[in-house]
Length: 234
Image 1 (tube, rainbow, N blue to C red):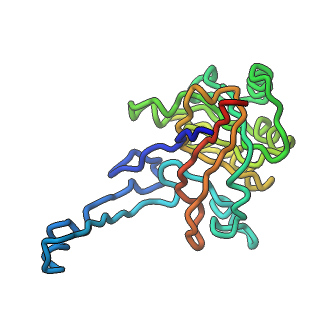
Image 2: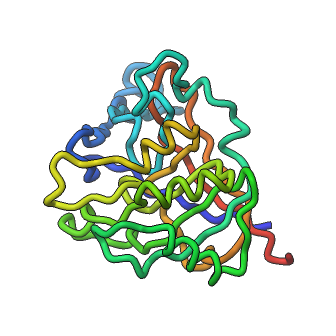
């Protein structure tokens, strides 16, 4: 068994979409301050403070994120079993930034993988986007069109994972932005996990995917420490 980290770092003033607040992280109590408060030189402690969106960094959306209707589940209400399960990774890196990932793209990627989508799977989409550092490039990315998202839902997919800010595409000229993939997730109760960091070794493999959210009452999403558990002997 081997654990592979799929999470991006959260750090002070990390770039985020315009609708969100950048994370603020600061030293709340220093070792020197705590030692002075405790009047001892034998030990001390340090703590950090942070303020951030519930969609900061690698995160999973709750259904309340885009569903105002009664009964939509906040993050603390979604069963933990939904954040733990089998997954495959498909390579969609050939789709240009700002373009739509179509059903045909997914069918071709699945055929290349040699895998099958099983009911309850998470499907992670490798694009290489998490390796981009130029702010102008980070904010433009490919995303699923409605038919592609419906195709995944029709196959019983539990969770869609992407390296980009969103499972929906983003382009500089699209104002206001449209969210067809999010709408499918809302209506079909399919989870989506965003801002993953997917390594090349996961492409075309099956593995255990874990992305447990924080138990934040009423939150519309939560940062997660996403991991893949690989059985290299299999």
